[in-house]
Length: 377
Image (cartoon, rainbow, N blue to C red; front, side, top):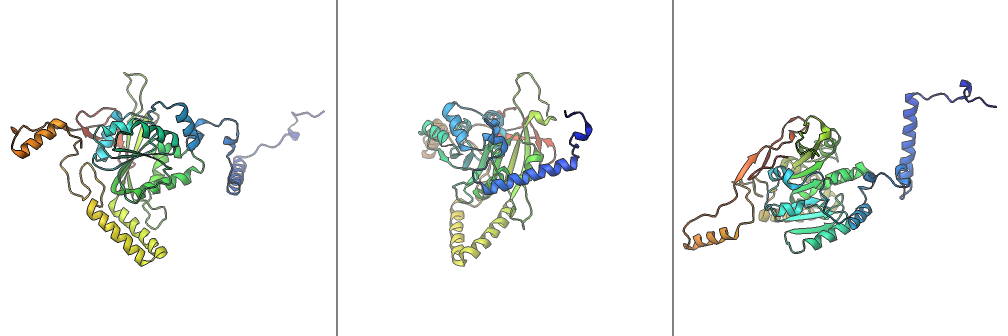
């Protein structure tokens, strides 16, 4: 009879160094299996029902979810709680790209707030079909099924882009870091010089900023983004509760990635040199000629609330949509028929967002700009 309590018969306990070496060996074996087997699944996905967050990077999960639950679902915050940040960076007459649109009402709310050209992108074919049918009578909204890591758009096509929870989903995908890197470089490509990419996320700055910033021009991972961070309180169940702005668990973070025109030009020059090596001087000359024609017609900078696409300062970023009575009065004044009464436009105002703002990596007080009464999140 074997005495299990005999110390001489028990396996010796591993040291911390030996445990770490064992974990590293398991990771290396898993990576070898992943490379050799295209159908490889990590162990936590091989078990019956994986944790739900493991599915957030998969198109079939979202297709099934939207098929079963077509009702509107809003991630993190509704538009009224975050519009002071959106209004600050996105011009109403610019082209806006909504990344991972889902069945949120964010696009609809922005449209009726004056944003009249919004392209909506989502990996789920089901939700794109649902939303395109729902808003088929509105010309300013377009819908396209695609992966944010491989976007079907031309270079420098959008003035502003909004991601509300999509980056967090990409972090849940298989080969997450590789896909995050592709996503970030795609956004660096499709935004115009000076354009902004707003990422609403639950991820902490120490976990997100390293993926959004790279100032090394000699690196293939070079990015033209300058990143500012804002923080907004999470919704509270208690309507009279006061959020603790020093507790990261009670905050969502907004990463505003703005393309620095100087860095963006450096990146374009580098891409043109590579293009010339592959395609030749004539092909590059043709490409640059087409770019100059496009810039001459539409401008080469992103439209912002303070500047137009040619870099000229603008007095305001009023709503593009006008009241019909105001348009009639303006026409009457032009013909000398009216009494000179001007249509009353919406007043503009500036307000401070209730969330704490973090400039770059430092902490400070967040500010937001919006029209009229600025909501206090």
